[in-house]
Amino acid sequence: MSFSILIAESQSIENLYPFSLLHCSWEIRCGALRLFEKIRYRFPESIISFSGRGAHIRSFLSRFLIDNKQSNGNLLILHGGLLLTQTLATIIEQKIKNNHLNSILFTSNSKIIAYYIPEALLRIDEQEFQPISPFFEDYLTHPALNDAVNHEVEAHIITYIWDAIHHNENALIDDFKCFKDYDSLPSSPQLGVFVENSDMVITGANCSISPNVVLDASEGPIIIGSNVRIMPQSTIIGPCFIGDNSLVKIGAKIYGNTSIGEYCKVAGEIDSSIIHAYSSKQHEGFVGNSYICEWVNLGADCNTSNLKNTYGNITVQLNGAQVNTGEMFLGLLCGDHTKAGINTMFTTGTIIGIFSNIVGGGFFPQSISSFNWGGHIDSPVYQLEKAISVAEIVMKRRNYIPTEEEKDLWRTVFS
Image (tube, rainbow, N blue to C red; front, top):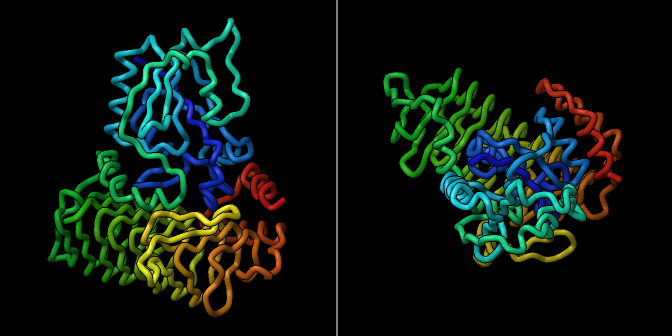
């Protein structure tokens, strides 16, 4: 049974701060893939369209060169924060096949995560249905859902950015199945490359792995993308993902439950963290249980605290309120284009906005605003045009030119 897919952001999108400042919710990386990439892979025959904040969608479409095609026919609407596993995709597809003439609500713990409306019920009095806003919750006002069949499923929504860290281990294991065209990497002691559980270590094309590298997949898979270089004396523990064109520098210690996106440069000690894409942590220092967005640079010997001395749950300052994360381990949540100078120390649960420069000694506040030059409450504002100029220099070094839609979004957030 064929159907189109509409991925819609939630009204609570701001809870994904700081990632949500410059990204749509479906761009979150959890596991090896971003949320929308999981949907695209697991429903390859479906036309996918997107709904949410206009400027963010325009930036997203321009960066990924995607045409926001008009959905047609039967329609499956997915929550923009849905972590779609292969098991869940199979269940949804089967339920639609068995009830394709009826509207269907998919719930998890009584919360709606998706709904299906057959083509015959989409139009109202021969008119196209238009919700009052482009968000997931407002599509629920469609009259066809009043008599929908309900199916309770096991699913997870990334509501806060630390949810992605929490679910990263299982997502990495699930995403391993998405890389069927990758080759397994046998152990080569004669070349100095030591692989534990080689069937669970896979690589893309043109990888370079130096002598005295240890890849230990005894606790989960290791996925190494194309054109990745791993330098000598590095140790990588699974489950772990290293994205295309990334560099793992000499002596890196990368522990399990870690995802490193495309075009990253990493070194030092990294544990249970997600580093999105185009970001650098090239030197010694510890990053643990952290979410680092794009175009971030952490200077030499930057360190994150990820555990309170009391061993209690970590509370963060989010959108002007204190939020109990329910997590014992949580490090740094860092927005795009932010840079931290050498020897910077971050306390547990620190959140930094976009385009900030963190410089100076000692610990910094747990919440640091966007466009902040210094990292303190009374630090001056990093002026927009200067920030854009520096960003363009940084991006050019990676052969990347920001799109006009992308820069328009920077200006919108600044204003």
